[in-house]
Amino acid sequence: MKRTIVLLVLLAGVALVAVDRTLMPLTPLRSAGSTVYGTVQSAIGSVTRSVGGEARLRALEQENARLRALEQENLRLRSDLRSTGGKSQATARLQGVAAHVVGFGQGQKVTIDAGSAAGVVRDVTVFNADGLVGKVTWAGPATASVSLITDPGSSVGARMADSGELGVVTGLPGEGRLRLSLFDPNAPLRVGDEVVTLGSAGGRPYVAGLPIGAVERIESVPGAATRTALVRPAARLSALDLVAVVVPEPGR
Image 1: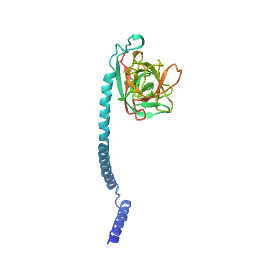
Image 2: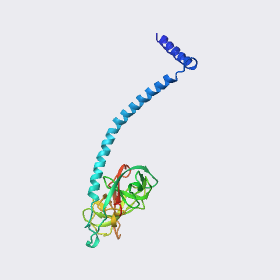
Image 3: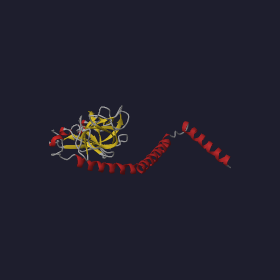
Image 4: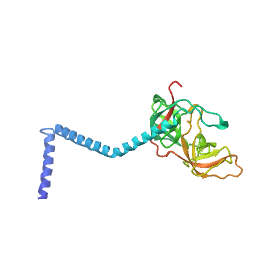
């Protein structure tokens, strides 16, 4: 019985081929089948994307909400920031442009999908919901290049969140860590202490008060002129997605 069914199917296939090539081309039939198949495939793809992307969409919405909250917290006018000697430091009004990381370049650099058309310029801060990411080093019309804080050439003015001690944070090549150097060699320092940005004049390249990271290990160098430690970045720089780019207000 099975052999008979198989034989009938084969004969039907041969007959269709013969009709297609001689008596009545089956192009309309094939087109209809292709349309139906394409519609079904598209529907299945849409459902699959919908099911698989729902969790992703929720995660992005949550990240976006956290990012907006952090922007509101860190992009306020700072009319009286603490600095060396008790002097105050003022920064310009700032606003943020949301962008996604779309590529990782050579070294500690990434590409984002926002450029000069969105107001992005060179030497401005880039951060995410966790903390400082880096600064823009090049801006095209639709994309920009960002140098991460772990880049060996990176140098960020820093302040200890608790003690207020000042220093600088530099990138360490190939380690994914930062080196903190405090100006006072006797400054208090403990593992877990948080490091934030000191801030630059006008907020460029770095605005003040953004989390840089936490002290992971204190280095002991007898006779050194500075107090040094290794810092773990607050932002997961190897898994970047949504970021904010700080840009000056138009006309400034």
